[in-house]
Length: 604
Ligand SMILES: Nc1ncnc2c1ncn2[C@@H]1O[C@H](COP(=O)(O)OP(=O)(O)OP(=O)(O)O)[C@@H](O)[C@H]1O
Ligand SMILES: [Mg+2]
Image (cartoon, rainbow, N blue to C red):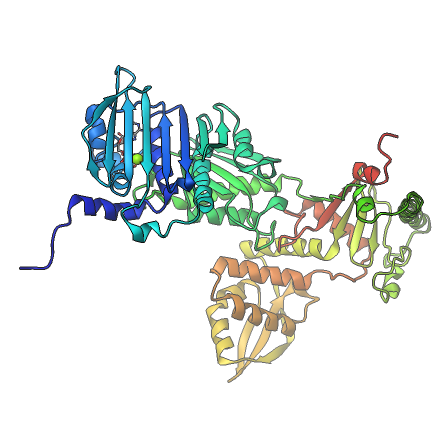
């Protein structure tokens, strides 16, 4: 006799449960989704011991009659699809007809349900797949499903459950996803008799985000919307300066279903590229409403991934929606100073000392602005030469020689500025003043210019009068070959000059201040380090970052008036000027009101 046997139904269910039910939070997800599919307006989730002991969901949805209640725990039974055609047009969260049968096979489950037109409810009890006869019961219309002791007959699975704290945080996350996707739903979560969330119906999305994720996340969210003929994308995004170290606060919903999608994640990353530091992740909530036949949801057991018919279109729509919104935003960083009293509390000083200290700070600031103003008027008066004598004063790092490092003047409008420490430009604004990091800003300006020229194929290069040669290893030679497209895009022409030597024949015109050999050597280092891990697009941007960094003015470099003016002019026109290509701020704003608070001038 052969060795192959047909598994019994309970075994089949247990194996299926392994796919869908990983932990208590998976049960929560399935039960909440069923309640939503049943048209519930109000859902209460009660959990004990992180769901390891008990999970119970009560809804006021359509309910089930006796016949349906019996069927619901049988595998592959569903009211949501009938034919294979329905599979490509799914508008419900569930459709596989597996969830309840799976959960019932690995726990003790009680289901009580009543339809609106029935006078009584029915209850079904089932213990690891073995059901008791249905009995009549009294209950309100709707459904309550209670799941106890998940995996209790499967010690191998049960031991993978984590502490109640960990499990409840997974449950909270599932609850959050569903509550965000259904902001018109009344939802409550109670854990061990403690109410964790009470979300009332008909709040705004921003209010719901605040209830679920706190004010830190919900504050200052900006809304962007794109309406196409049969689809709509709504995004709520936080300023890049709020970016987090985790991607947890990137919520993407497709017709009410939380999904993870690599195209959309890529679009989000792209939209924020250069506005946030590389290890940070933006906070965004994206809601896609698209025709249900434009994607396939039947590709993942928990339906967290879908397959879009036109993923590129979704990608470009999300990218342009976010990008345009970001470009229109004032992204300069506002300086947040500590509350004026904090210093006093940390370092107790006598009233007299503190008074003297404050007086000193006030004088220093007044002096600073007075000097700036007087130099400005002097410049106007004396027709200040185009290259100031700033370079002479570079020897004292940290010294504060306003006169020496200044290259300031009144511009035609109302702006006033000065260069400090040959590194920062301070500009008076209507609201206060701002400080620009000259290197970071110039880097961004060059980077944007490079990106545009590369995209348009307009990066011109110059032939070197005398080719510059360098030695390369076999590995570097391979790298150059593999990345020949990228190198050509940059406007660099390399030619073999001997068995282990290459010659730089042409070099980009806009990098006239950069030494070709130094540049190619750094380019080889970047390629060695990054070419394996990055796709070609990201590698190109990495190289453009590096190029911009090398070509930009340096910290410590004195600038002429004309250079400063050009920089400030470009700041107003270049995209994403508030951040350098690595995502660090180029500009920090200080408001007069903040200064007044610090100097305790408020109320005068
Ligand atoms: N809370 C509920 N209220 C009313 N009917 C329900 C409820 N929960 C389940 N049902 C019924 O039981 C059926 C089986 O539920 P189950 O979750 O197992 O499968 P499904 O939702 O159809 O598909 P999936 O396995 O993808 O979730 C559903 O199709 C629905 O008809
Ligand atoms: Mg279901």
